[in-house]
Length: 299
Image 1 (cartoon, one colour):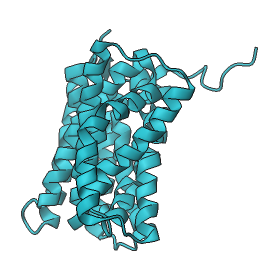
Image 2 (spheres, rainbow, N blue to C red):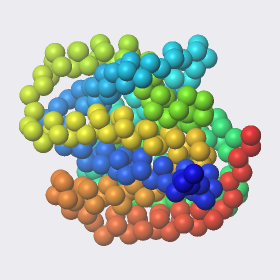
Image 3 (cartoon, helix red, strand yellow):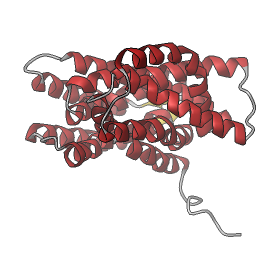
Image 4 (spheres, helix red, strand yellow):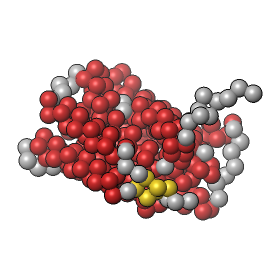
């Protein structure tokens, strides 16, 4: 019998590979959101994308004949829904109305720390002191950049992004626990379905008030975040978190600023400041140091 190409790799490495695939899809989220909110209301972009993804999820769950989650699993799915289906999308959409996507990419460099904290609270992750020091230093660097770029103070968009990341981190941790039982794509699919009753009225109201007239570029951005950022990317992301651990795999998110900055320059024509590039490099160096620190997973 032929061996799987992953058979010789440890679980942590496999988890990191899946995590990177998820981050690769996530890296275009802010540029695509920025393009979408240029013409569409943030509520339509933030929650409408999840409504579209929920329709795709319903089709997939139906044709694959998935078992309905238990009452206990539904409680966890509500946390997932509030974090990654509602919280992050709507807050990041509001932020992208006023902030360049490249700036937002650096601010979200705090993601690994938020994810590690959530993983410690909800899963069996027990990072070492060295890991925490590296994460805190990286986050402090990120916040310093946000303050510097905001002329000495945090902007409303920065605070929205920080809130988005905190919401997402708890959704990541809760989803990782469920993915060990249900599977990664099932978690995001059911999470989307659970969120529909909370989203439908705000979306209808936003469409009624603001309409759906938008440029092809805006709709292309919306289509990307609905299909990839809100749905397909989570297939790999939750699987990676479940296999390799929330704290460890969450560190892969530090690659996201580089990918997002490049996408912002190529797709939106945004100018990238030397400070932004330098900050991203410093953060990456800190994460490399943190990668060498131990993370114990308590079963």
